[in-house]
Image (tube, rainbow, N blue to C red; front, side, top):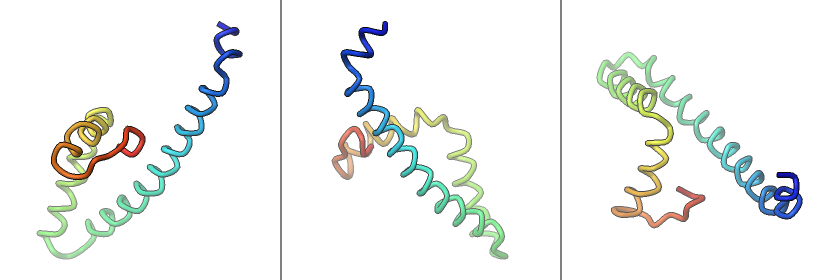
Length: 87
């Protein structure tokens, strides 16, 4: 096992860097979007609150892997062509 790591340490390091970068980007955007929808839940308009609640419940109840696969497989079919990392 140790020889695999010593032979491929650059590949593992690249994967680690990509994971950290993806996590930081996701954290940044999730904080912004989450804050916006949290504020929308406090608006007096019942329609706006309902839309915010529907959005929140959809993303809260769908597993992250399903959302990731939708962005990787479905979105490029209909909209923007994305690389594997961007998806």
